[in-house]
Amino acid sequence: ETAVFQTPNYHVTQVGNEVSFNCKQTLGHDTMYWYKQDSKKLLKIMFSYNNKQLIVNETVPRRFSPQSSDKAHLNLRIKSVEPEDSAVYLCASSRLPLNQDTQYFGPGTRLLVL
Amino acid sequence: QQKVQQSPESLTVSEGAMASLNCTFSDGTSNNFRWYRQHSAKGLEVLVSIFSDGEKEEGRFTAHLNRANLHVSLHIREPQPSDSAVYLCAHAGNKLTFGIGTRVLVRP
Image 1 (cartoon, chains in turn brown, orange):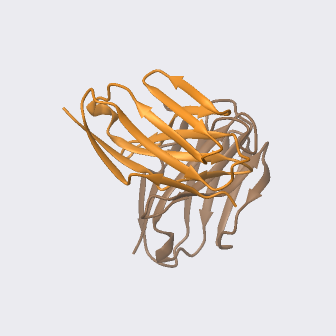
Image 2: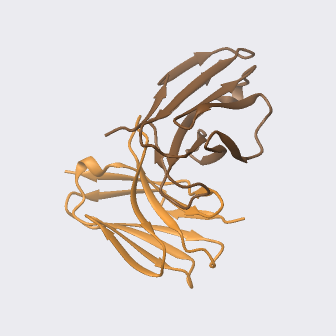
Image 3: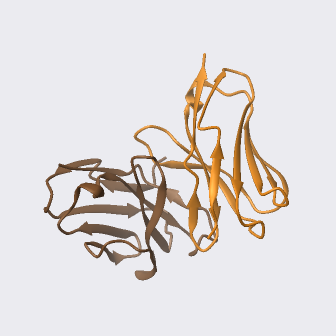
């Protein structure tokens, strides 16, 4: 049963456009994450929020910005997308931060930048 | 920084035969590993979390951790075609570090 929801499923855009991805979890977790899965299927953490506070910010380009309105929602905005941003973006949540607890993932948003 | 490598890259097994996947890591002081499964167009599903040397079973999935050998494995008992997916090993340190995955195909 899906408890981490992501929209949209798929998005095609052109270089230079701005995109926003939404993530919502209904598990009552305090911590949420964004991951990027590249064409080689390697998953890497981008950001982590705990109770709406940013706690992990890996080295990602400044055009990426996470946005959290409450602890159940964590959106990702990309200003001026570039071709290398084409990937699957996965949202996840966990009860405890810093990988002390199992993370549950959403189905992902596939981004294609033309 | 912890590095996680998985083998084989792909694996084909017959339905009902045991499937074995391997994962090696670089830092033997770690003790928090997870196996995830990723079906096409779906999110990751956690299968087993293991925190100490030895064995941990969750249904048909069994993980073995041997920190001295820097190795954690996953065994799938009686695999079914619906188990066909990419299996990801992950180390849970201050962040989740994933391997590249093993693509498993279970033939009827």
